[in-house]
Image (tube, rainbow, N blue to C red):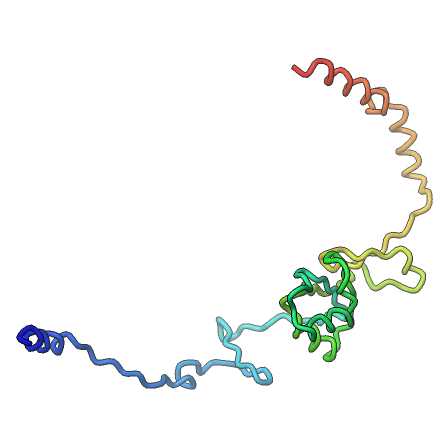
Length: 180
């Protein structure tokens, strides 16, 4: 009992006053710019965001297993065609309906925008189109014989110090027999 009486005055003298009131957000963050429902606070007052061109297509790949997920997530993956192997991917349009589906399973998939660095392919280019893992869509056409390339090939064949198959085979055999 005596101890409590002695400690109480000491605790009262060390007690600090704290205010738990709300801060005024309008006063603290007064330089914000409003974009629809989002308030954005730029670093400098004259900062301009670069114009953004949204992607027309998304490359969607499943990165997590289907097992153990609820039926509605499995159904969405099946509708998108991602219920097979984990390395499989699909291409979907960038429209609100698909974006809502992807948002529901965002923890199971990897979404990358499809870009066309050399322009969009035409109907004739469909057979020569490659979609990379990072979302780049490239058109690879076979180029016909060009005079410069044929001249360079003839020049290379005439060089005595070129690395042809026979020379490389002999060198590899010698290195195998005498490694040190």
